Image: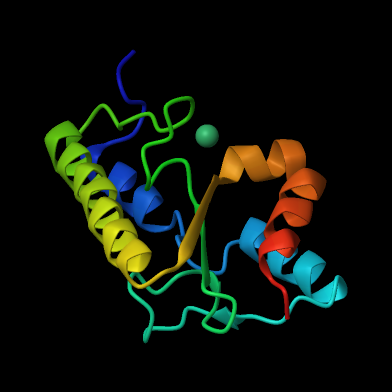
Length: 135
Ligand SMILES: [Zn+2]
């Protein structure tokens, strides 16, 4: 199917797909906080600047947008500027692999969730994340 938007319009739309402080990310943070989980957000002293992390508990959590992180189910690449977006998303994926290796070397547990999984199973994921924060 052809893209219904012009190249310019598509770029504008995509640039608005936020990757930080998204609604779902705020929901996760709120739910964890309510559970008594204490964490740092976007701590740039930890490799990859995880969305949620704890140095003490050695946990790094990444909440990934389906688009930016190439979710197999929802990470559809725009039909215009395809190469540009593909490269960009591939770079995100490669960067994450490097970051994960680095974090693991430093003894961190890495948890990654796609936006769609969070929507489907928020409660289960909150339980899972909570397990890793021993406070
Ligand atoms: Zn998805």
